[in-house]
Image (cartoon, rainbow, N blue to C red; front, side):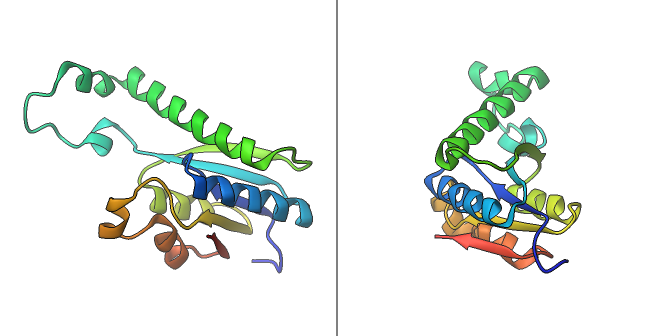
Length: 155
C-alpha cells in the first residue's frame, strides 16, 4: 500500500449511516484527488437471500426466485442505495463510480478491496440490519477486522 489511497471504496445500503459515510468519503476523495467508488452488496441468488423454502411459499414470495425478477430486485435496490448516497454527496468534482457486489456484504467488500490497487474503505458504523446486527455483529466490524487496507468507520 502506498502512503495514500488510490481510490476510496464506500459501501452503501441506503441507510443514514451509509449516506453519512458517503458524504465524508466524498470530501476525503476530493481532498486527496482520488476517485470514489460506491459499493452495493446483494445476495448471489434467491436462495442466498431467502433461504430454501421449508413450506409451500406464497405466490408473491415465489416471484423473486425467477432470475429476471431477482435481477430487477437487485438493480432496483442498488439504484435506491446509489441515488441516496449521491444525494448525500452532492456536487463532487471527482469521479464517482458504482459497483454491485454479489454475496454477503462484509465478505464481498473485503474481497473487492483485495482486488483493488491501494484502496481505502470508508464505511458507516450502522446500516439497515438493526436487531440482526446485535446478534451477529456488524458489517463494519467484520470489514474493519478482515480488510487488508485502511478502513475508516464513520459514526
